[in-house]
Length: 262
Image (cartoon, rainbow, N blue to C red):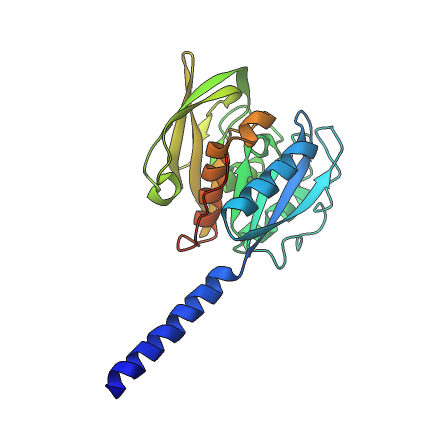
């Protein structure tokens, strides 16, 4: 009887420790700003949507600048992600071509901070002859090597039929294929061998990978090129998907996922 009591006590401590760990929120840094999108609205949609689903606190670094070279506060500060568990890149900074600044943006991820990349992050920090497949190790390949896929443009704003693959089962668990409202299908110049396809999109006769993971020097990176319009970012299916991608990137597949109101 004493042995049984001792075992049950230990089990209680273990359960308490797990519960305490689950209660400790992840800290996420969301970066928004730049050309062509309603980031002022979307930053709040993402924060509220993610915090409603998973145990995470989302902080903002936002610039209201609408150019392709927004003066984001992270620029010139390679320690901008210190204290965070994951960074969400949702900026549109296609005109930011300074290799030193780009190296600073990548610094936390080279040092092991996982990341989530949304929509126009795929078209940021590009320079040189980026419309052709970049060569591994080239100066203008660094952002694409981190993303895990090279994209240079998109088609018209029309619905995209998304078909999920199960190469990373945690991210797609319980998620069904769906068709977006008017969205942009980003092209695929090349998909890097360190990537795993999570979803493909079809828009008329055009097809492309629209979500994937990447192993960036041992750091987990999840990306989706979907997310142009506010109604997409506010869609419960989109937020569920991004939330699962964030947990996967942060290696928190054990975390609880709440069912948010639609």
